[in-house]
Length: 141
Image (tube, rainbow, N blue to C red):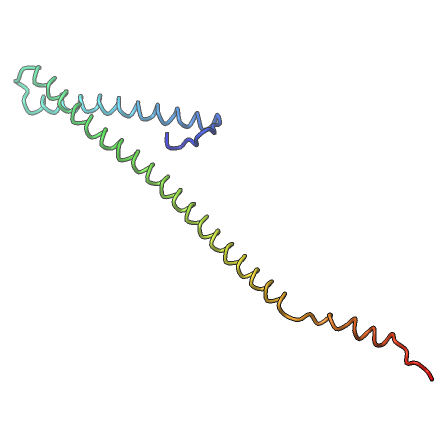
């Protein structure tokens, strides 16, 4: 089931999964009944005088043909769902990589600015020298 996440499940997801499976099963059954009826009545229209065995055989042939068509459609649908999920995972992974690159660039820029700020002389370093000179009173003779 492509719609399920590993280890996580809710009642709504389970109901959705069951309804999809029932829908698929009913679709197969109706396709076989319809294809048999089509084959049976199709050959009856064109070959009315033939033995009924031919009608049964042609109906069965249509069922087998429908089986192949339904199997191919089922495989294509399943592969499409897998491909969509794979593309979504790849997009999420690429987005995470891009965010990691942006964070790395931001961190490098921040480290560079911090290094530059540490190398620049501090304007307040001279402040204590000036204040200590002002605090000294000239000696009176």
